[in-house]
Image 1 (cartoon, rainbow, N blue to C red):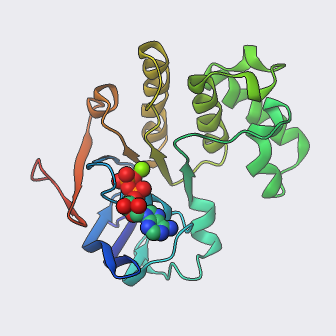
Image 2 (image 1 turned 90 degrees about the vertical axis):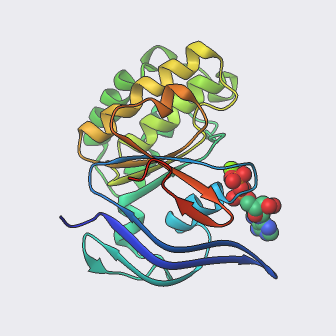
Length: 220
Ligand SMILES: Nc1ncnc2c1ncn2[C@@H]1O[C@H](COP(=O)(O)OP(=O)(O)O)[C@@H](O)[C@H]1O
Ligand SMILES: [Mg+2]
């Protein structure tokens, strides 16, 4: 089977300190991964590297089996990999514009944007917030809007950085409930979280970042 993304010899240094030293990391098509690790172990940095937001030394990488370089970060990966920040920033404009932002940037037509944004708002359960000022929304609502904004881009790989941190139990459950849809639609997902509602998702592969490397505690 051809993997979605495989990376060999990833090293990330901040000055003298080697934060990440990962000999190999392979993410399969249509698969869900959960990454844990203590604070400061480099989880956010790894997601940012995969999303092209942070440079790193990488010996070799392949996307859909084709050799590819992450530096400069190619458009093919920019279109395929979407990173959702732990505390998503919403623009101070309408929710529709926030969710449609990436589609507009890709040159999608207005009618198509409206259709896809409408579907994504319904999916994320945020249609009733349509006329609210994004600045007034709760953390859980913002996170669901950020997921809708990511979903309309149909990422092949979605990177979620602690999507349920700082949410109350009800909001956590609402966010967690959205996640299986990504994998059912054929995308892969890599979630950084310590939240049991996410850890217990079916068919999720656990990974731990420890002393700069990725370990698979379950032996997967
Ligand atoms: N731009 C940077 N310059 C120097 N050190 C950084 C930078 N970004 C992150 N770090 C350090 O790298 C370590 C890992 O950070 P991070 O990836 O945010 O960890 P985690 O998400 O696992 O908590 C931390 O010690 C952090 O201070
Ligand atoms: Mg982090």
